[in-house]
Length: 67
Image (cartoon, rainbow, N blue to C red):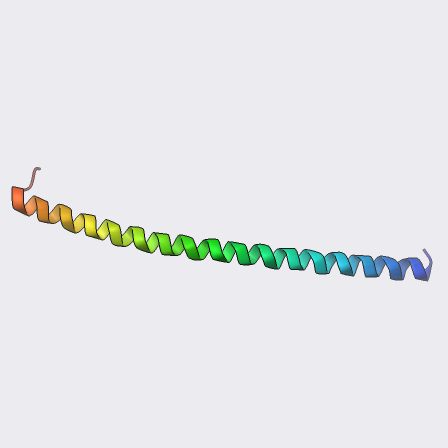
């Protein structure tokens, strides 16, 4: 390969790398957002579960334990 062809190939590879890095950064950002949403949903579900468990305990106390 001639020097010019090698230089052209190096430029092309570098551009491909930069493009791939940009795509990866964008994908990472999307995944981070999805993780944040999932954590918020998990926290809300845990709070709901605690509330339901508390309500069950209150009901069991008011009507007697079924078991």
